Length: 633
Image (cartoon, rainbow, N blue to C red; front, side):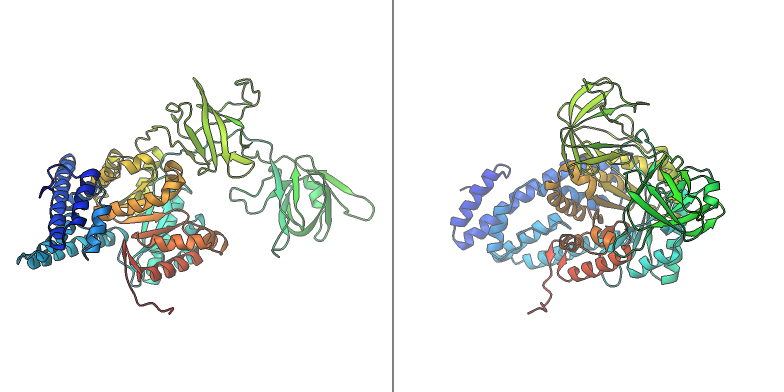
């Protein structure tokens, strides 16, 4: 066999070369491996230079140039399948090149220097020592950039904890202080919810909590981003339904209201549902009186008057489930002689919904019809949805998938016409699903391009400049998106505001190296692995593989990664974690930050996450196992 590989390393040439290595005597094996590594190194350098040529205009004068070169080298290195080479290196007690992300070329050079030393090169120990110092310096770059973006490392762990602020964080100082006390390092304000005043109040509570606890806490304001969601559907007649109380929580409470206002369902911030009744009838009610009815489902029910809350309102309780609608008759015995009655008045219109099942057809139109849809394709009542973001149907073709509500409903384009497309329901999470406004839409097969910041984004950006340390860009898809955001920040004089690029589409994954270079060359950058939309876009079966690859890429780029979506979700919502989500949280500590979403048990969620990642950091650092003494045996 030739002493040098004359062609680029391919799976065929690599396998042939390594077959020769395995058949050679031990000294010859070292020499052949050295030649193989030299050829690999040359290929990596050539590919690195080619990629860097495209990035160079962005890197002139930027301190990020060295990290960009390492990212280019890593991408070049990972163009090769070196699994057989790794096996040979490991058999001989050498580094298998499996953990070279922080400094790729130095990692390859260190193995080559070690082989030189084995083969008698007296200068190799000096080279190895120099390369070791270089790799240590490169490894510290990620730590320094994480500190700059996410705040100082907590004393008890490396990985930070981010928490999405619930609406009550705007007014509940005790909640926010409790989160910071338990270990929240970054408060995430979601610009897709609440309003600018609430965002400012949340930020104020976080700053107060920092002062009260003595713990630093950064603030990330996520821009609303494109609203790839179902637009409001035509509303239906209002009604109110209460489930039977469970788990010893006491009776359900509702208000009988004689003010003339329509009834409500108890949603949209209305804590207690309200039923509109005649004020004269209401005036005869007394505490303890029983009110009876046959409800909207034909069931006899009794309501007990428990309190008069105002001259025009009383609170009543029920121990059983009840369904009320306009026209239901309420009766009470105001005296021993007569039974008074009233008819329930109108309710506020109920948000529109569509009930579907597998096999149904749904119309996805450019505009929502004002009334019932006209006959389409022979079906008189085909339900219609639209997208809150305009221009989503132009690129859809027959066979493309449209996924709804985080992929819980899978549809496929069956026909295309001038006004929209026809979707056939292919799969659902439950036998019957309900489509409603604000459910997410994903178009994994369609080249949909979302360009620019919306007016809502710019409003949120103005608030971020005043109150936040970082700003998050949803659905970052290419370098131009980051350029636009940073230009807007520069125009507002926010030179040091950090940026988080949220990766949640196939296009975002494909363009991630360019996204990183475009942003990190201009200011502190982090990458959020937004696993919810990303899983829907690329397929759930690929998510585990992809989240690993994104972690490796971020480490090679020397930018911190944020692991997000459904971390400890059951615990945060119910107080009881699943075994799978605890394992997921343990894996998450390899990122520089882990994000929890809001929920009723969020304080417990923070405590548990801090405990899990603290334990795991003694066993694992990025891809490297750490062999702490075992204590169970």
